[in-house]
Image (cartoon, rainbow, N blue to C red; front, side):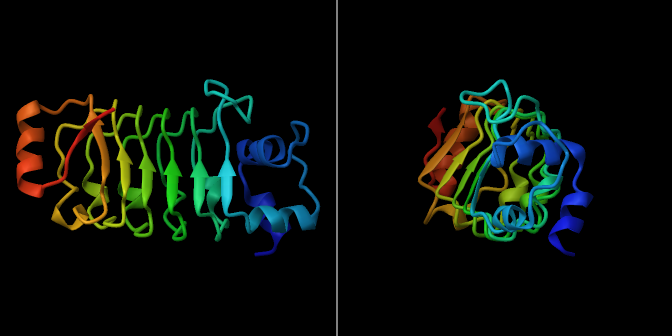
Amino acid sequence: MNTIEWWNALEDQWKRAYNIGYFGRPDTLEAPVEKDLLQLLSTPVLRLVGPRGPNPTIPFELTNCSGINGLENITHLFLLHNAIDSLAGLENANQLISLFVNDNKIESLEPISGLVNLEALYINNNSIQSLEGLSDLTHLKTLNCCFNKITSLEGIHEGHRENLRDFFVTPNDISFGSIREFEDTVQIQVKKG
């Protein structure tokens, strides 16, 4: 697929977001020039912050991650203060090292379960109920999952012990006793957010 075909396949919200938040252009659906599209497709860093966030880059809230497909070199992704309810669309972002999707409406981590290069994951202030999608993400050094609906720490295990140094869990719907048992068993300290 060439760059124009990729652009034409994007949802309108993503065309607008890229034009405004990445290129600094007016609110339009029009495709940038080829050179600019190539730059976007190879960018290692993308920051699209919705209007509720500090220093917003777009005047509306994105509702999904579909526009990330095709950004094969993305290593640091910031999709903060939007209305994203699913991480679907990130499955092939295998180069991701840092993912910031706090202050959204995300419910599940399953779509990112194969992103084994992730070192920093900020998913605080969402609607996540389980960390089970993180079992294979043992390179995580920082995980902030405060202010969700998490009831269990299943998904984080001894395999995370070597790297996970900053694990922010509370407040959530998990008991102090469960956290204490987790710390004793897995030997990873839980921090308060």
